[in-house]
Length: 90
Image (cartoon, rainbow, N blue to C red; front, side, top):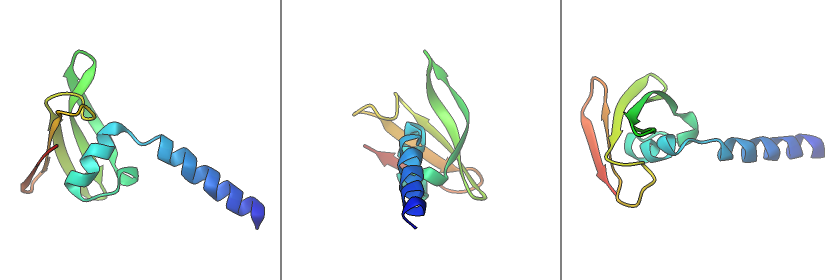
């Protein structure tokens, strides 16, 4: 039992460290935990993606940011592909 608990805690800690900053900022905007979000089509200028697709289950969202999403002045917008847009300013 102790070994199973240790393995579970180690797995959870390891998974938490691997969440992308793009998934973290999209999570609050699309109503899905960051750990469940799959990212694709990361595109941008200067090596920093400024647009990406975030998928949660069967829903897909086109997201974009004016700067790196973790920047204090980032403005991130996610719109459901085939749905209504969601705007959120930090």
